[in-house]
Image (cartoon, rainbow over all chains, first blue to last red; front, side, top):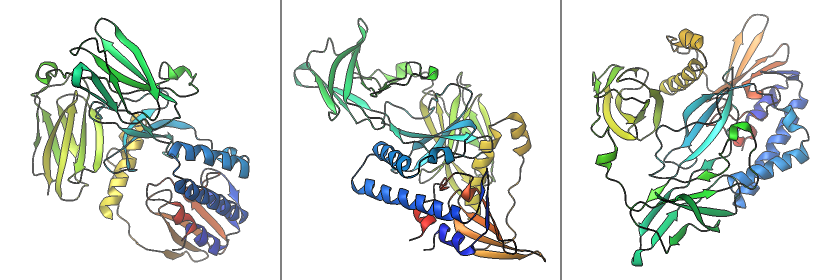
Amino acid sequence: MEGAIEKIDKLSPKFIIGSHGDIGDQTLIHKWNLLISTISSALTEYRSASYSESKAAQQLTLLLNEEFPGWRNDRRRMNAAAASEYREGNSTGLYALVGTNPVNVLSQWLDPTANPSIKSWRYKISAVDSCGNESYKSPSHKTMHVTSNIGLGGVVNVLWDYYDGFSYGSYYISRYTASTGWVPIDTVVSTATSWTDISPPNLIDVEYMIQVQPSSTCTATKAQDHNTTRSNRHTTVEPDPQGTIDLINNSFSVYPNPTNGLVTILLSENPVNAWSVRITDLAGKILSQSLEKGATLNLDLSFYDSGIYLIEINVNGMVRIEKVIIQ
Amino acid sequence: MQSLEMENGKRLKEQFSRQSAINNQLINNMPYPTPDILYDDSYAVDLGDLTVQLTSVGPLHTRGDSIIFIEEESVLFSGDVMMGGIIPSIDSEYASFDKWKGQ
């Protein structure tokens, strides 16, 4: 298969005019070809050595600094206008856009649909400039998901899946009771994924949480107290959902259904907070997603092919799904 | 292919619409025009004094990128495939190093 570089080289252009900057000659092609080959060879080597994504990124940065001094300065200085957030779906390595933040707000985004109590989630972010040009996606960050259960003799077994992102040396385990609040109770090595509380104060209102901490913490103003990453909080005795979720009976209707494209979503109650809606195909692929307010939403689905789609709404963590047929 | 392009167009439309109220107002009713001419590998446009060569270079910055070469002047307009200083442009989720360097 002929690559883009070969196709460009065949044209033998005297001048190359790219967007956002430089005008050059054929020497640009050779420079770019060398850089691409270097990156490609390095990634092949890192893959065969089973490097983690973050380690590969570190090694690649060192290599490029050495082989192509100033390569960072060659990069276009992006005047970022927004940050895009991506979340990995059901297939490994496939990320879908799930949110956008204007750059002038706090560097924090709350995922309105991912429930940390169900599983761990993996994210990447990118920067988007005012022209809509998007940077490369960042290395990924995976949250930790913690569960716990009561073992023989009244102990509590705490189990979690690994953290993936920055380098860390230990897992810090914290325990909560109404009388003590959150208290750090133990530290285990980074290869551990379970721990047993042999003397829990009780089995009713005790909760557990896992943290990891990077070797060097961020001092940016926006970082606030986000210098560790934390798991969900899990209690061995789950509360009665009927008593805690006030929108358990909230439902919604979609009309007309079947539709030629224009549909109205009507919630049975008017939620106090923002709620999310997303459209997926039957394979689960997310086609669109947005945050909404109010009890009524008009959607234009006319640009989708005819077929059956799923409309999923999430109100305060309660998820409801309806099928819609586009004719 | 048409629905894929529309899906991509919808993503870009939403992305730009979110950036400002005026953007949203201008883009809101934007139609999705369909192409008049389709080509797989290359297409030459005779403009009389100039011949413009369009060459598909595959998914790199977007799902389907083309470069524009003015033969008589030997000038290549690479668009976002080769942005000033940014190399290589592999922003698209369908891009790969193999698409750049060949196999």
